[in-house]
Amino acid sequence: MAIMTADDADQLDLQIYPDRDRLGAAAAHDIAAALRSVLQAQGSARMIFASAPSQTETLAALAQASGIDWSRVTAFHMDEYLGLPDDAPQRFATWLREAFFGRVPLGAVHYIDAEGDEQESADAYASLLAEAPIDIVCLGIGVNGHIAFNDPPVADFNDPDLVKIVDLDDKSRVQQVQDGLFATVDEVPERAITLTVPMLMSGKQLFCMVPGELKAEALRATVKEWVSTNWPSTILRTHPNCTVYADSDATSLLEPGQLEAN
Image 1 (cartoon, helix red, strand yellow):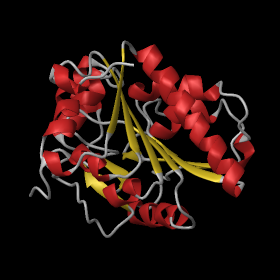
Image 2: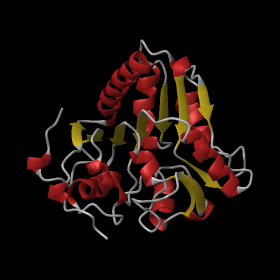
Image 3: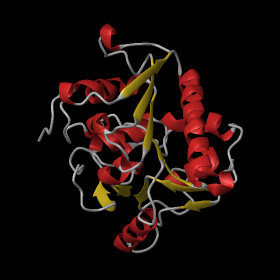
Image 4: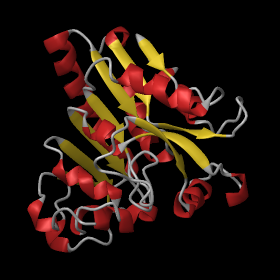
């Protein structure tokens, strides 16, 4: 059910770049600046990171940013598959460790436990997240508009939980194959643990990286459709401090008047 029209929610800052590398460099520059500001103001920071190829260029550039005391940063990730072997390379914890967590000297990294009791793992992660506010969230948008694994069938803008167990939408599972993470859809797990929409939206600053033609329809919907769980990413337009970084491929379905390239 829609909660507001497109014209009622115009807080989104959409920045467009010619390619993925310049998108990643710009996003990393802004994330680093925000992080330095938080560290200067309060001495420590808590961040949430998405795990996806859409984040690769940004995280690579962010790992090279200067003037950041990573030892004062606590990191979380957004979601994790259920049912994969502990050593599976597709595990989001593994992906983030290789792409970023293992490249900077973070003060603490909290991983979702996908091996123990599922509900206990979700509750334990929610407790860690609830210990203090989240300063920065680095996220992406799925082909069906999901943020984390809040697919349209399970997304809840008023979710009472911070972390929950979900069944994955078919479009999300196909996307994992399109991203080259799995060879076939049958290999993609059917369930996951995910941070909820309210948990993600509680972040003080959101930085959303959306490169590639595969995300063009999702980005168009995020900008133009009514804010609803039909396209969960539309909720980002209601956040007071959310910047979306897109490339020319991802913005190919937006009208020329909506585009202002950087």
